[in-house]
Image (cartoon, rainbow, N blue to C red; front, side):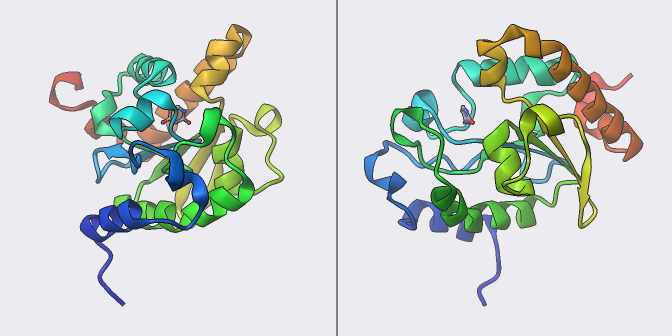
Length: 198
Ligand code: URA
């Protein structure tokens, strides 16, 4: 067994042809941020901006995500951000369960390497991909799940908030709950960075 490293992860994603999504993309989007952050964010899959830049959450949804993090005083570069699938699905369609399953090898390796204490799942695809197909985002958002010592919170995807502003109060509740969990686990202050500390 080769040692699992970020170098191996990056090479594995770059070479991946486990599903057909890689056939029509500009760039793979493995994820980015602090590779040792206690907080990992998982979205659905790259959109057009992400595909062009090779970076997760850099379009309109990404800008809102940056604001959501800032609302609980978290600088975006202190967290690790990635997606269920690493290649853009055509026309931004939802990845199929088969595509999500094929890509899980990468997400598992990433989670192993980051070793987060807390995972925020953005939207139904991320919630189903990590917690199982029976999850309903409208019913299960805001409910913490503990798996192997990692605390996991499903919440709305920022794109859903851009489409429907009435979801914003619930999203804000979830972000406050996220902040409270990070405080409880003793990792909030570290995430703020030197300038953010009281
Ligand atoms: N939506 C996602 O789920 N992920 C991105 O990286 C961008 C938009």
